[in-house]
Length: 388
Image (cartoon, rainbow, N blue to C red; front, side, top):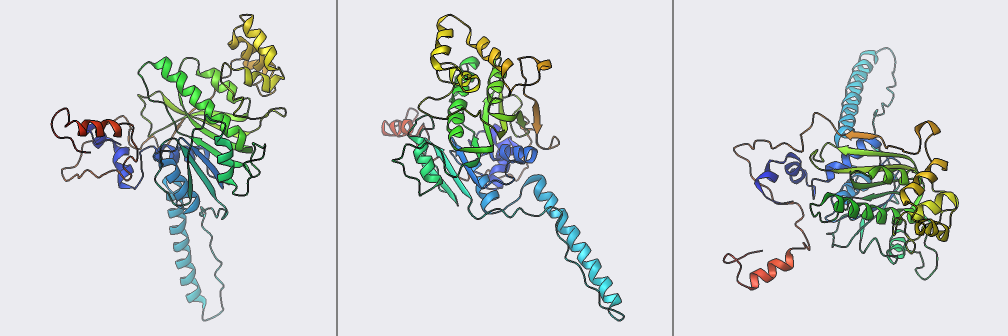
């Protein structure tokens, strides 16, 4: 989070520092949870591309510290106030009737109580960049595209896991996999969307190795011309796929989040990062669903068959596809998350006269520009003395 004048007027940027969040992206996950109830019944979570740790911070405060935010917090406060009022009314009624008979006041339970989650909450955060420690979070510095990351993740999830074994599946699968990663954008939208889709495939490949049936997967996407094909591919593995745009995500950005619910992989599918999906075309997805082997798919490609036509033809015959009336083109529903009367993420709000800019909650631990600043400082600075 920077300190430019635009950032100072960004309401969510200021709220993140005032409420103790590491980044404004924490509000995106909270608003997604309000819409889809992502944290319900969840005790084992993997957070990919987690640095600087704002999403992991949300997981820590919600699942471990049992804090509530947004609409849930408001409902809890309303329920607590209602309980207190009913208790006072019951006590007054009991005192009035105490002279004639003893009245037993029933215990009033809150309409929206804090979910008593299991004590075995396990949260693992992975990123190439170092992440400052968070309560209850296990951090790994690893590459999510490398096959060696799976044993490290399984070891972090289950300390008794033997990394020397050939098994690449979790004995206790996770309930939720999150990915808020994005590449360094170039400004070339087609290229940025392609790189982002490959990053999403990397997160999906790892999620397929650790997710349990019925699990959830949430990842950032860049909406583009051919993104519908990606949605249809995800529909092969999840019963429900929705595109969500949180209120705290700028409307001027192509950023959105794909929310995949109820993980139901094909019976013959075997997840592996050694043969990842989405690399070198979509052959892996095609073979997983309709039983084609890699040679048959490769032969179709060599015969100059359009890979998009292959996927659409397979989706037409797929059990996971929509009804025949919808045809092979399946379009994911689009949902706006968050209170629409809340702050506008694209607006610049006027600052009060006594406004004091706060420092970020967690400064960058190893920013990409750190080495450049060190070299510039050693050289005396391009425009005089430079400080870090």
